[in-house]
View 1 (cartoon, rainbow, N blue to C red):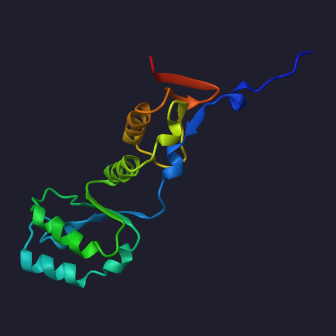
View 2 (cartoon, helix red, strand yellow; view 1 turned 45 degrees about the vertical axis):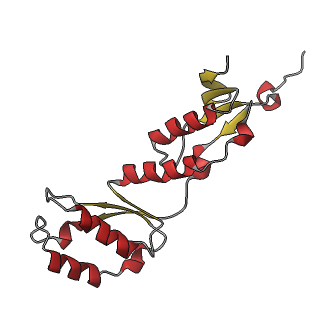
View 3 (cartoon, rainbow, N blue to C red; view 1 turned 180 degrees about the horizontal axis):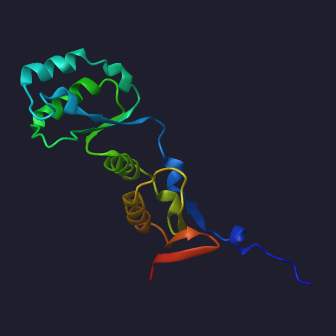
Length: 167
């Protein structure tokens, strides 16, 4: 009987798991409709009063997505004004939904990622995560890692899909 050899553990294959970069912090959608007259009209004086009465400290260390769930036309300065109140507390502020927020968080992480450890190595970008890693993050990671890696695959070591290989 021949000895069973685990070729995966002996390979130079490097696994990159986006879930490892998932930042801690509560994700919050701040819907501004309640600060608008009848949920539709922004009256500047009333709006500013609402902002002054808000306890912004509740957003400490949160990732915040600003939006308006009604069909109100909200001027850009309104979101900018809210961001000035959130800035001392929130980790990140965007206009959009939770999916856009997660994408924005990961875009920043991947842009600042040092991928030199993957230089001239076969890299597998791990699929399946338990955390809400957005699809865009996989694209950005692939592009960033492809610039330095020998090859890029997706999935698990035992069943991966080849994406790129240096010719």
